[in-house]
Length: 186
Image 1 (cartoon, rainbow, N blue to C red):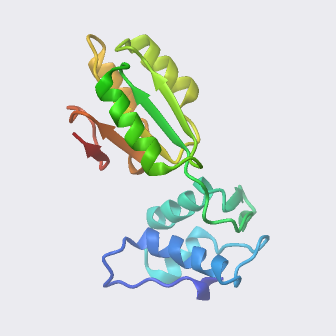
Image 2 (tube, rainbow, N blue to C red):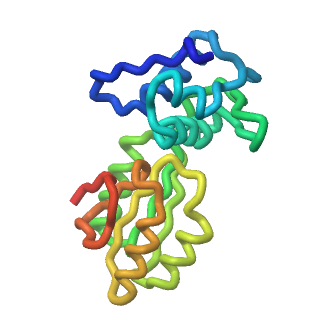
């Protein structure tokens, strides 16, 4: 399987995505099938002179897409070859208003009727916001959050900071206190 992985040191694409894309391409061309064992993280590191974290990020992305399953001590195996998975959006608004309805309508129109959107409203209440995030914000491909608070703002930022940044879209206003690289529309 190592021969299926290609890394270009001069590419602007991050190396973890190159590893991910190589495996996905192998699946799409049917050179990699369910049950195939992936090389260990150590093997990939040694072969391509990349960091352990780089390979872990690639494998974590494959796990997140449910393409591979890992068993401690046994390795990682291809579990599914359905790559083009459907989006699943977590949409969290502070309140219902005409302005928010325009945003919601734009989302549903752009994404189309086949994309599931789980819509939550927390009414500017930090306790409800926290409850929604802790109990419902799991397993989505995208997390879209509009954050406005009368109180509890810093604690809310701490909670938002726990969301995967590559899946996060902050809407309506830029929020002080968020860390990492995420998308924002404001």
